[in-house]
Image 1 (cartoon, rainbow, N blue to C red):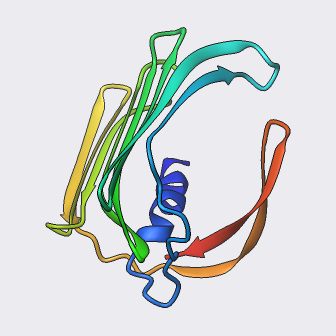
Image 2 (image 1 turned 120 degrees about the vertical axis):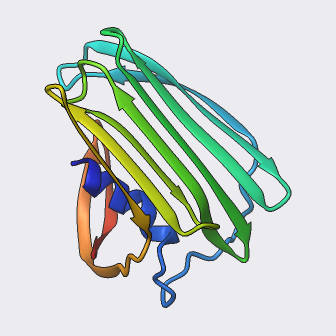
Image 3 (image 1 turned 60 degrees about the vertical axis):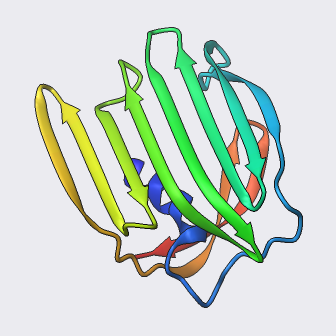
Length: 156
């Protein structure tokens, strides 16, 4: 699942040169207070979405803290000169709400990635160069609570 999420997150900033996402409205500062609920509606955590803009550079951080002590910390930096371009990305997930502890980072400047995961006491690490070629393969309906939207599916 995390790889799917990563692919969706990376899709707009991948090396897919034929389909850049043009900046129509510049991103700015934002602070969202989030509530995390289970499928049954029970509140299982709280979070913050923090976004700041520094010229053409935007930093966005999503932090979710769960009642069971779990943490989801997602940090992305992108530029918004004519098109949105991923500059760096970091994801950390840990705690009982996640099947494994995960730390992932990408850096456009170096072209590198690092990934580390641990499950049942077994750790895995990998690193290398980003060489993804993603192609849109169709649309898919995505539902989150009461919100339904169309999303573009990508294949590697």
